[in-house]
Image (cartoon, rainbow, N blue to C red; front, side, top):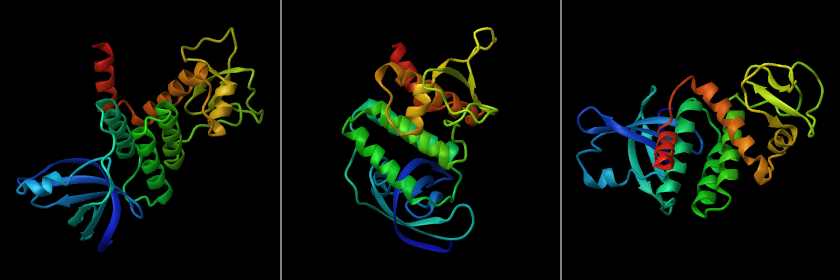
Length: 237
């Protein structure tokens, strides 16, 4: 990748790099997640002000290797996620992308999914279901998608009337009253709803959240997400 011009993108993260530059993580339409060096970003207030999350940008870059140089940046989209709670939800999406999606994995559908999820959050339309759909889509795209069709170690279809616990290596294991385990139970209805990309009813929404969180935590290998820590702090406060 020698030179890319006017690529639609979203800023996922920015941090200081050397004395005057910034290291950016961006989600782009055609090139997936990319890392870019923004030279002189800290010398110019105008440049620093352009580094805004949750709104669409147009970026250009050049150079080879893992970290090419940003050559142009333009804000093209409207500002979104105005409230603190929504910003934390957006931060959560960004952290998932940075931690689960390898760099330079092209995926226009993921870009569209991220953009649509931001719009749903901004309109405060079914926030929890929107987050669950994004989590599930990203897990599937990253190769970590859960088994939602068959019971573990068998070809038996998920029974909506049954209960399961989820083994991250094997999939849904039928619940046996005499078995010893500490995992939360998940209904077959919840698994089927997730597979069909339908929002489970309110009584099962907690099961969906717990299931996907457990799978994500397994893939994070103990890494903490800042967005979760903030939400926990606010809830405890």
